[in-house]
Structures are given as structure tokens and as C-alpha cells.
Length: 107
Image (cartoon, rainbow, N blue to C red; front, side, top):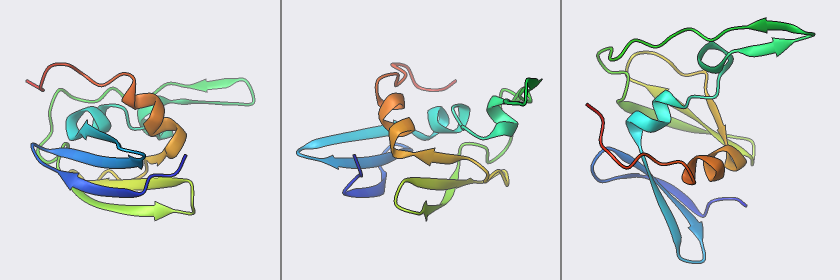
């Protein structure tokens, strides 16, 4: 499923309109913590496991969304205020994250 629109929501969220009346507001701190890049999540290449880097609790700008760029017709790449910009959030990954949104705001 491809979103109809992606906009900056209120209260530091990314608002994704999936169509058919379904709109999901993703808290920016949650998206940053769930960045899918190899640096943040690690990866497995030919049986060798590369562990992810542990993110600090907070770095200035890390939860500030400064840009978003389309990636083909299947994803969006988010750019963060701390310079991190390698996470590609596929539509399928964003749909999965919608089922796991946090109930409490960040510290």
C-alpha cells in the first residue's frame, strides 16, 4: 500500500495518510529510534553479524526531522537534525511500525 500523502504533523509527528480514511501519526522520536539502517539496526552479511551502534539517550537534534525524500515508489528517506540520513523507511516498514506506536511521549 502506497501512502496518499506524507506531511509533518502537529506535536512532532510525521503524518501519513494511507487513504480510505486511515491516517497514522508517527512520533518523530519513535521513528528515529526505529531507524532501519544498518548503522542503527545492524545487519547480517554472508553469515557475519554486524551489531548496531547503541544510540545515546539523547543527542541535540536527533529527533528533529529536517527533511524527507522519496525513494523510488516504495519508501521515504528521513534526514535528522543530528546529521543522520541513511534510514530508508519502506511503506511496508511504516505499516509495521503503525502497529507498535508508543503510548507515552519521550522523556
